[in-house]
Length: 383
Image 1: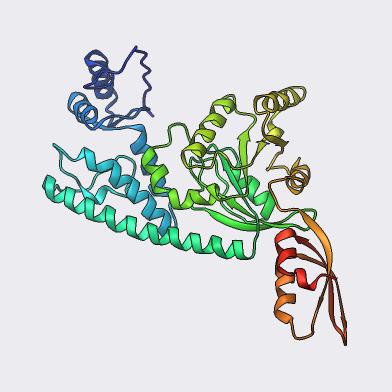
Image 2: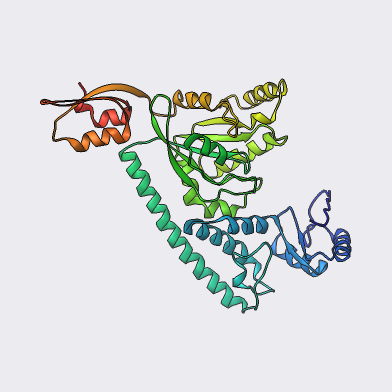
């Protein structure tokens, strides 16, 4: 970054957002620094963007376009790439008038453009067709995820979804809980594609943990809509772990932004637990004071304080998860199966913690710690 300019004004100027005087100042600075691009930490209307490019004489991108470009670089799976492309196309469509469009810019570097132009109406029809095609493909993904969830409901495993502001340490916590080995990075949106792994709690209760994309202030509406299929994993979770960077001076604002996005996707009414991460960065008595302050700020949430990096507080978090009323209770039971009922015995081994197995001529006796749903499914075999 060559330079940074901050403006305070009562209301945005309709034509350029910043007004003619500030635009002239920016033009002079950009020319003096030989800048090739000006980035606005604010959303620009299509008209404002065109006017600013004309006034400044350089490429202008806004906050939404930057986020979309970062997402395009981070997407690895086919689903993630489709979701990002859909968001990019929806962003691009109203910005075609007066400039044409270069389709090859999608998925490129930040603010870059490909060669050539096409006519406005041809571009609109092409983009509209592509949007419809992507929506069909994503709907198929959504249906597939729905079927997978139905299968999990048939053989219930509670799902715990990690949610939080980007760079709060969700992926580090995910790895600490599940040993999944997913990418841990301080880069924005380093984890874009969702990951699902199993976790066994101290009571031997097996659950699934889902790592999701990090949220950010003013997450573009186009992205929230495009990632609906992915974010449904959060909406359907039995429990949401809201991971918060306790060491961040902006943690309260970040937490509010995360809760706002959860509300937008219909997940605000799911049971929550607040996980205060990165406590290793704080010394006493500041650490204790900040933990107590967050507990007071979120009185309706259960709160756990951890360092996903060092492992401090992880055992206590697992105990808290075990005791959460949002998850199915676990109890020990003894089952009896006939020797020919190997499928049911295998099911019990897959979905419960088998403590003891005894074989006899009369059949197989299994003692196991099971959830209520598994117990209901095998009720006829309880002895």
